Length: 66
Image (cartoon, rainbow, N blue to C red; front, side):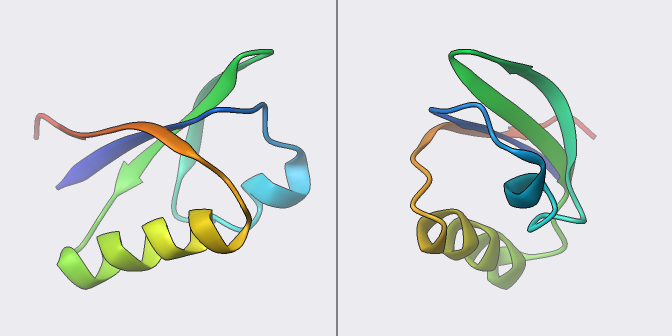
């Protein structure tokens, strides 16, 4: 399964590097959208924890069609 995450800010390269399994779909002054494979619920929870650990607010998250 694949997910898409949008955070409220434009991410610097260092923050993007914290998510090697995700790709940047778009980045603007209003936020950054990343997407990629999520293997299971534990992986999803880990990604969300990583966003939180970096102080990033996920403003949208949804599963992408396979």
